[in-house]
Length: 136
Image 1 (cartoon, rainbow, N blue to C red):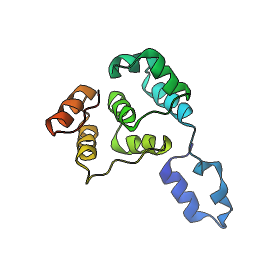
Image 2: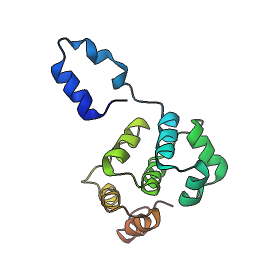
Image 3: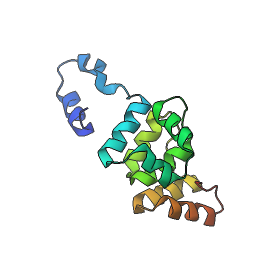
Image 4: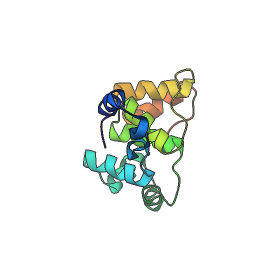
């Protein structure tokens, strides 16, 4: 997959709109994307089970595509993997979940946690301190 900047450059330099039908505009299937994130970071599903306090069978269902992950799980996963905000937003988009919105207090806290690299536990404490639903 091309980097966004590279794709933008190709679009600007294209002689015709034919390139707009390329597979570059297709979002990957969520299970494939999740496996790629884990592989990039050298993490197993078992590691995520431990870091996120998940039931093992539920986690495997999320990662093999038989269950659709909640937005809360995706935020928890983003924090556990140390994703930066753009990566977390892309994960939410691929999963068909709403992006983080800075004017929503809970989302603002999640954005803060992502930008500071907080652990899932510290992000959970921050949310609860703000009177918001926790991650666990």
